[in-house]
Image 1 (tube, helix red, strand yellow):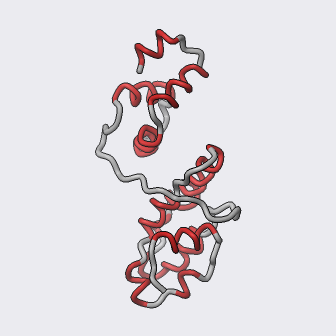
Image 2 (cartoon, rainbow, N blue to C red):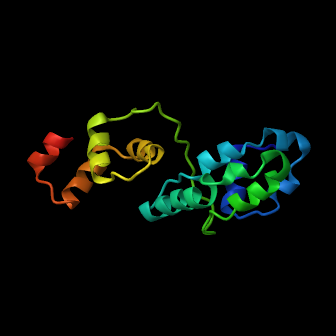
Image 3 (cartoon, rainbow, N blue to C red):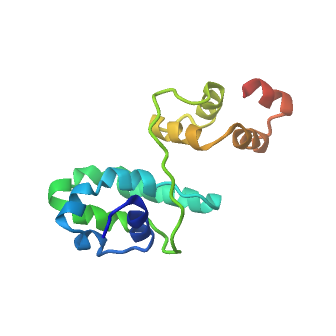
Length: 154
């Protein structure tokens, strides 16, 4: 079996609890929990589904995941990761690369930071990277901003 990100994500979405155990020693060396988390957290599709995957990943994996030793408990990490899928079939996962601090649209970032002041920097980076100007403008409209205020802020 050739291990690739598509196979990993299919196993994740399918809640395949035996996936890691079935890997050969060579495949286990190629398997990266970090990559699996980065890919697994983001899906295309309905906004609710996107939010679910991101929140489930943050809640179940990002917080203490690497406190569990990869060397001694990689299968346990896989089992934990397999819980993030809602079990509704394979999704199209996408990669969101790491950005340099402060990367992205600075006006958009300042607007979002003003409205989400308690958000962690890494979460803000992700929010800026997955939203475009139109989605943030829509958010501003929902907050009651006038077109002139939006034009000035963004």
